[in-house]
Image 1 (tube, one colour):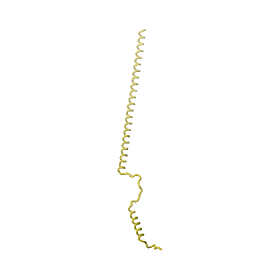
Image 2: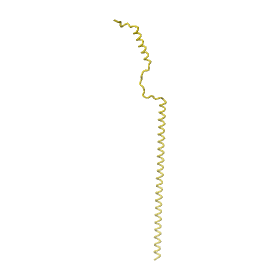
Image 3: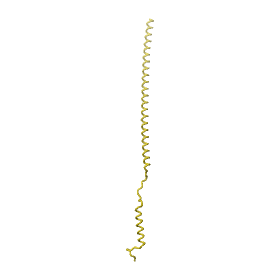
Image 4: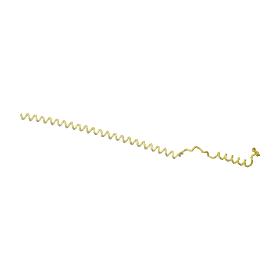
Length: 120
């Protein structure tokens, strides 16, 4: 029967090789949780620049829309003022025309009464 407490030369060599492998395994990089998407600093800066550019474009578009709305409101105000002015002028012309016709009717009736007085 073999003595289990005694080890032979080959057993010592295998134990030494295993110990060396264990020490080398300590220095190997361990697997860690990998990020699904690693971004470099340049990529992050590019994304920030793009977001800033989009914000500026949106602000510029909003300013343009407000300016268009302001111009539209001014144009509508001008149109309504012009319509009111033309309506007032038209009403004034109608009043003048009506006054002229009443004056002419009065003169005509006066002339008729004079003719009738003259004929009598």
